[in-house]
Image 1 (cartoon, rainbow, N blue to C red):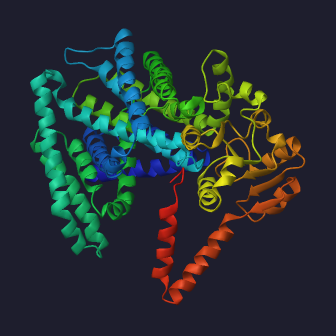
Image 2 (image 1 turned 120 degrees about the vertical axis):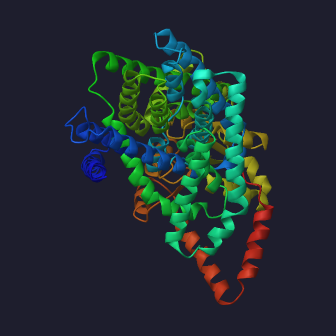
Length: 573
């Protein structure tokens, strides 16, 4: 016991020190934890060498990690995902696994007779890193964009796929239809038990202790370990049980509170898991490095093929098909979980496990950099892709534009997000005839199709590209509205756009949007005729709400808002 406490102390100390270094060099924290484990482990400085300590640390971290992954799986979002995300995820998972089996079996990895290196690697390579993707997309403010939503939808369905694999994994040595059905039946019993208890028992208990944070935390932990033990009794794994425990809690009203309470504890044990995983990585030989590079290369190529192709065939356009493929091109931390379960079950060798861990590290570093430059990379690729015959949604617009069929009209809206959606709804409510004078230019395929179906004039294109503006014919427009704030623009900002537009059309009235008050004068200097600052109108609206509340008229104010919302049919909700 004293040795275990000392080993945990070393794990946390080195994880923190290397975590600080990773933070200042803008590298993934998981990478720092893996390196920390390697440094202090039996293949490094040998400060932690007890296999029992490493196993206990790893299993505790794994249980908490899967519990939190389960808490973050939103079943309602999966149901509402829509066919684009469902087909994209299905194509990526099925295509990735088929290609993976063929590739890894083809290069000589085992597949049968008690060893399943090729199968575990194909599953591992089919999963992408939620931690890396969400962090980068959040920093780039792309979580709420179409490519961002597609990426997150695919990630959720990847987690469901991993759950199904973990259900079958204990039976791989005797993989028969009856065995698979029994395994799935056991999972069904576990899931049904967890859902019934979380639906009819836990809410009442948590309601009684809602004001006792320590009991909320203790209750969540008790639930995690209880379902884990039930899973063990059903001949499933405790890790599988903790995942189901998290998913079942995600559906009840206190899920957010539980998540907030467990987050700190989760971070502690997830850190321990990745440090313990780093301890199991030996000093790589040429064969391990070679296999790791093959795994990394296959992951990138297969992800582009299996993600881009379904999205492109569903006519999402080159940009919205490429970006999710770039976002998803790495190996998941969940993949390391899958690999570890294979090691524990003696289904894969240590060389394969080490190569997968190295491939994760390689792709974590490269992917973080590439995702940061994804817009520039996409723009660079679209031109060559068109030259080899791939069509974008703007196919035919260039020629039609010269004939006058696609030239911009009197009023042009550059970029289409929620402010523009609200503007069109307001115009439709007050003066629908104005809609006939409006052209919208945007590269969101959903916006393009929805506006076209409503009979509005829309041109598919990237507003940060001067050629798009030139071919759209905005030089003849009278009023040009830039409604997208700088925080959401890609490849440009409002000041640059104003300068481009003013160069192409010296006489048009230009309305721009400012994020910061300090941007207003810069936009006027660039050539804008009017600058909107949306937070000022928001402040005015909030002040009227305060006045209504003070006069005890908040109910009337809400009724007025409800009536206004009922009239609107916006493109973007």
